[in-house]
Length: 237
Image 1 (cartoon, helix red, strand yellow):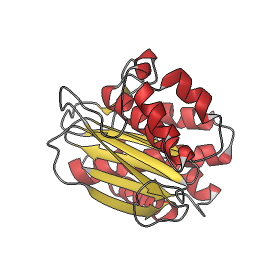
Image 2 (tube, rainbow, N blue to C red):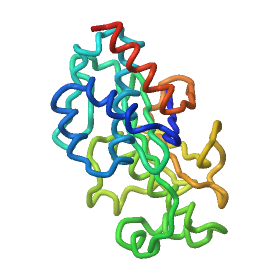
Image 3 (cartoon, rainbow, N blue to C red):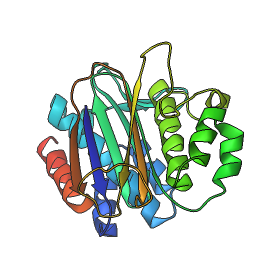
């Protein structure tokens, strides 16, 4: 499994727009509907990351890459069942995870919210207990949230009523080993993953299918990644 974590800090509007212009018309139109510049940058960097990985891994020209979505919105690469990926972005980060087996990822900026009300609506009793007993309830809440989101994206279901019974509490017991979850903390300008705690500014969870091998983690700057994508795009035209 490969986990690519890209920091958007410092990326320019010109770099973002140049990359967007290279995307297929449908994806370009989706991003162009976003009004906020930062939202456009996050979406563009996530898209460029997975397209660059596909070009490098499968040697497919950018123009021939066909990314579609399932009925529930999970993206997949048409014609290549052995290349699975998932994307997420929040705040200053865009995350891309790839593997030969299904994966899901979610990154969230840790911010003040009414986490107790959300947990009451969507979390299991075990998850709510884990949060209430934590020394740092807010990071604990976002660990559970991103873990549930990553499993939902691994399954391809999205947020649904299933969340009420999907238990991702630490130390949970499962009757099967269908998936495994790893959760981490991130700082605003990080070059390493850390345990999720009170000093974390972001929560990141990855859900993977067991048996996918070791995890290769790569940290990138958005400007460098976009330049690499544009170079690969031009070489494969």
